[in-house]
Image (cartoon, rainbow, N blue to C red; front, side):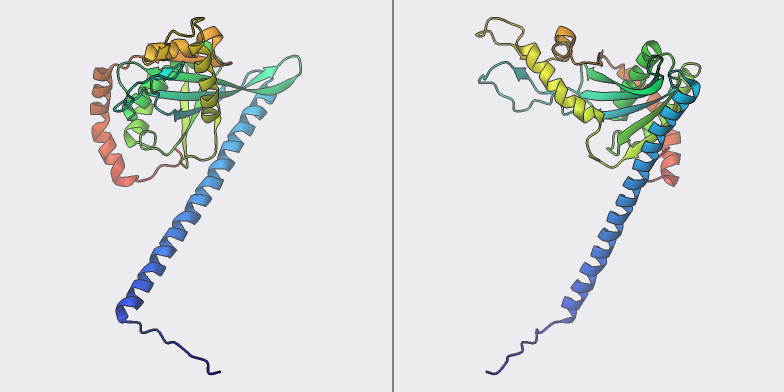
Length: 286
């Protein structure tokens, strides 16, 4: 049997297309390796931070003055009902709901060892559903003010978020020093770390699942099964999350943002933000 050999008739254009594909593949592979390297370095830095908190607590034999604040937007909340109903959900924008998880270390005087604790903030905005740098700044300010009141021994905070646009925003990074100046003698934002988007499941994601259980309990607060119970406003959402004490180690904040004040702050830092953008394109750790 005679073996047939088929020689493809390739043109110069085919070779050019092949070279272009190989070049694009190299760029994508380089981007992937850079992302993996960033992810590994970020995990090392975060683990070192937790170790530092524990070592400091053990050395002082008292509560550690350093805390770590995870911030992440939860899915926008749509109207929730205790039973099925014919209701039109189209066009619903939902309620802005951010979860902030505070990790800190305390000294157990009985066991004589350092213990890590986590407290969650459910932050719900009333009157709007925006999710930009100015809203994140307002929510961060509300979190820090509550930390000052509830946990006065925490004097420094490291913030961790993913690299979503509203977090890895030059305007937000520029505005944080204003918070440090305002809260100078009480608390200080020491560092901001931006991880890769959806990098695993952090404390805010875990708490988001528990949040749904609280809402279900809040919908069952009536004995009349024929009565329709709905959660559709920010205030109703806050009340449902606090029903019968709500989730453990959780603080619910119903926030009314002063947009005029935030507009003035963003306008004030705009020239500085433009200058920073000329030299800094990507932020991983600040």
